Length: 353
Image (tube, rainbow, N blue to C red; front, side, top):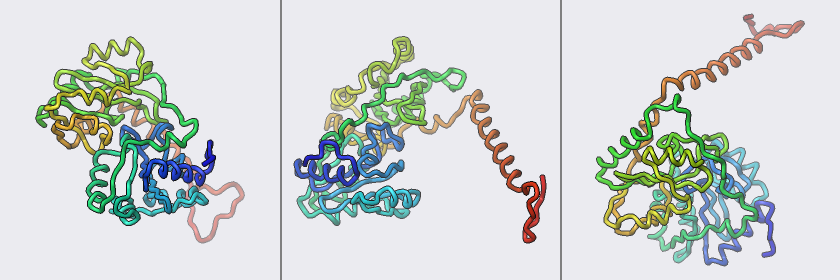
């Protein structure tokens, strides 16, 4: 195909299908996700939006050589219908309780011996297991070692490089030491040796750091590996100033290159046990672990303690709500007052003030 720069969703879809044929892939699964199981994504991982033209925050794109469907819930039906027009992609309306509908659709579309491809870096371990359970018995093979978008997406945005900064102490409850100790307590209770952490909000909470790698979200791209006696933050070089690296080290958190995440997982002791949340860790991360390791799949520790707020943050949280309430009240009162010289409709009773 001669599309060096496929501009329209229809052209991009054709380019993807050519790449699928080249790699003997019969269907492609493209979710709205990244290596951190995020809903709101850096541009580099907005592949579903780039390919389909639908820019809502949630959706799953399933593609075969003959059909393509975008699966979204009712929040996005009107938007998706408008943005998919002329793309060759059909709007698939997800109803409540139909989370497995995209996989069921693929099971009906694909013959025995077909191959479903996806990028293991953006598919959770839990979703990959569901695909195995529903598709392997039907004779559909899974392939997860390719990111076909890299072959068809010219000038794909690079990963964000903004600096990471320390959250002001007055807005923080507890220290890094205390938060790590709380997590290690849960690690011990689970009889695990290590915990894999990839969700960006949990990492920001645990490290007491903030960033701007995702629009309108104070988070930064990173992974963490926590053991009983060590903790390592995997983050791109240059995102932390030397002084902050030293501060983290003093608080028991070492740093390593973001790209070394999977290589480090592969070096964990083969007989150790790992605590992870299959819904929040990607298949690629799980595949990097030694095969003989024991996996404990459960809810990861940080979310509940993260709900606590420092007293100093209360005014920060409440003040915007008060300002918004005042503006809404003022607007409501203004809308109830007739303009000068206007006749009041006889059918309505107006109350001034």
